[in-house]
Amino acid sequence: MSTSRTRSRRRVADATGRQSDAAFARIKSAIVACRLAPGSTFSEVALSARFGLGRAAARAALTRLAQLGLIIPVARHGHTVAPITAQSVHELFELRLALEPRAARLATGRIDAASLRRLNRSPRDAHSPTDRQSFLASNRAFHRAIALATGNSRLVAVLDAIADEGERFVHLGLFGAGAADTDRAGADHGHEAILAALERGDADAAEAAMREHVEHAWAIAAARLGPGAPPVPGGR
Image 1 (tube, one colour):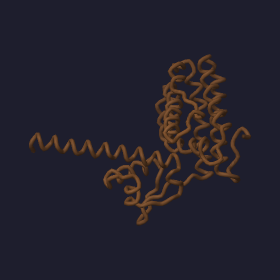
Image 2 (tube, helix red, strand yellow; image 1 turned 120 degrees about the horizontal axis):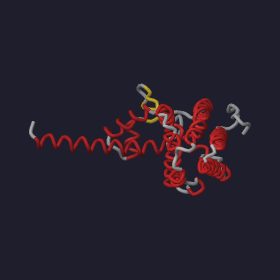
Image 3 (tube, rainbow, N blue to C red; image 1 turned 135 degrees about the horizontal axis):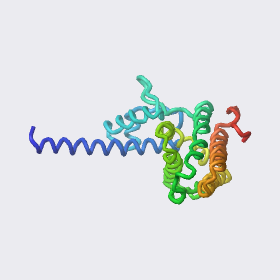
Image 4 (tube, helix red, strand yellow; image 1 turned 135 degrees about the vertical axis):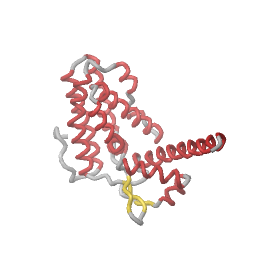
């Protein structure tokens, strides 16, 4: 095979990969923000038309989203956006509550608190959809930096595995229908308490602050689902 033909094929493959990445980012953003409503069903053709995507890029993006558990392929009916249920919220936050306070304790004395503070953003400043996406990205980086500082690669891997679904629940709690500025202020306060404890090198306080922060996030996400959700630890 000629060198020019090989280069041409590589350029095509690179372009297809970039289109797939862009499609993935756009569809995922719509799912996280619930612009693609939980439980809604769509065809590949309809999705491609809605977002102005090529079929190949859309198909590749949908495969990745299915692997993350954000959509569910349905034979002969297209795809369904994974529903947000009381059980799914309970299970995810129960796992976070088991891991993240311990991560905050282990990170104490190891993490660069000044760098962590630079990552932090307030949800009260997130007024537009773009602002909210930026906040979610910084919030994810904040929590991941704490996990990385533990030095426990398995803990990081578990939290990474639930991060995409977790973003949707955080968005629901802070920005979903019924969310109030007091909810966002509570989240802001949680990060400040975690930062202050890490800056002091107080492992007990860091663990307690993270536990309270996760319980708050759990409570406001459950509140968006209405009555009937299982009780949240801490009585929130």
